[in-house]
Amino acid sequence: MAGRGVALGRAAGLFLALILYGLLSAPAPGRIRLAEAAIGALLVLGVGLLRPLSVATGHALLERDSPPWELPAVLALAVLLWCPLMRGVWLDWAPDDMLRDVVPLLYLFLPVLVVPMLRAAPDRAVALLAAGMALAGIGFALRWWKQAHWGFGAIGVRAMADGGVYLLNAPSVLFAAIALPVFGVGALARGRWLWGAVGVAAILGGLLCLAALAGAVHRMALGLAAMAFAALGLWWLRRAPLAALGVGMAALLSVTLFPELLLGALGQAAEKTRLAGANTRWEEAEAALGQALSSPTAFLFGQGWGALLANPAVGGWRVSYTHTLATYAVAKAGVVGLCALVAYFGGLAPRVLAFLRSDPALGWAVVAPLLMALLAHTSFKYLDTGLLLTLAVLGAERGKRLPTG
Image 1 (tube, rainbow, N blue to C red):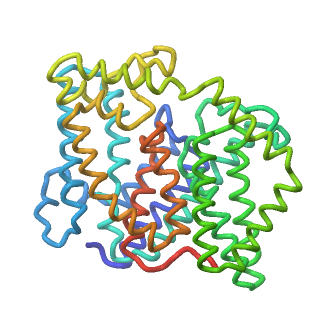
Image 2 (cartoon, rainbow, N blue to C red):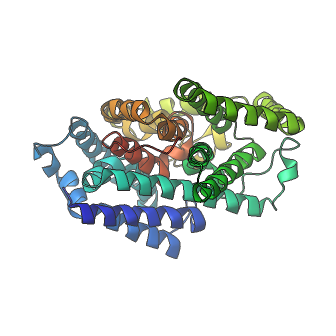
Image 3 (cartoon, rainbow, N blue to C red):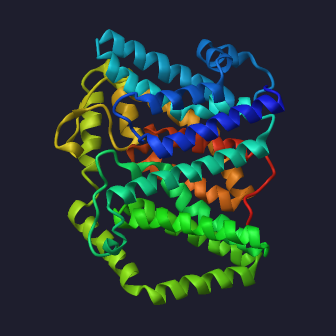
């Protein structure tokens, strides 16, 4: 385990990586530029070299003081890394396509690589990761608003385009949309002018992200944000009734002042649901399952990293992704890989739930984008999903909470 000073240095490297990610990169960059190279270097600084080597070679399995979730996680990573990789090499898939699968896999398993390196300073590490995630979300939202020509008046009137690099698909945007208003209200409740200024800035940043998601009509993200705010409202009502009533009154006042905006956004979401439905997710799942059933070997081990799928969700083009983690795993890694994923998330689930119970304010901001990424979105392949999982696991091991008044 790294010492406290080393752990803080690694957390600072991850914080800077998130800042560069939100300001200069994309959720799924098409090529490696200077920004991506810098982010990669900072990730190496945050993770180090010894831990990845220990995990890849299986030496981490011999560590006796590891928490219960790490053993299945290390085994799952070994299965998901080597079996589909060897399958991809055997089937002679393009190295670039294999790399597009292996890098997101390592992102998804960042808790295995990062948490042991930050465990010596969990409070500061959680604070740095949460701050970096929120700033990355604001960065993506600002860049999206810039390409949308700051068209705030279009919210609730028409659905604005996502843009070519889908900046708002980053889970950090939804994280910031939930975490920043909650943090801002808690900061305002402290009553000091400096905290008040920070609180107002945080609330405005969160609203900027929420407005972007509403402008582009990201239905699931908006629904999960509403669920998170409702759950936190009930928790706050039990914990601090007067503060919860004050926040509720402010929300009602906002609805009263801007009814057209709210009703228009709801109408746009309903219209998108009518037109798009489930975005051909069922047809996509059928195609992935058909690929997995093409042979007994494909059923067990998938078609390997680098395999392409004729995906109905994108007009039948052969692409390297599906829109849900389960179908992606079945197509690429087969039933064996899917079982490895179940074991991995089964080990993490108690930690995530413990984090949600110990710190609901930050917990809901983490859980909502994770639900989106892992159940119904391509963002399971993104850097911020792995760091959100890391934040949840590490947060379960520390005592400090997000300020909530």
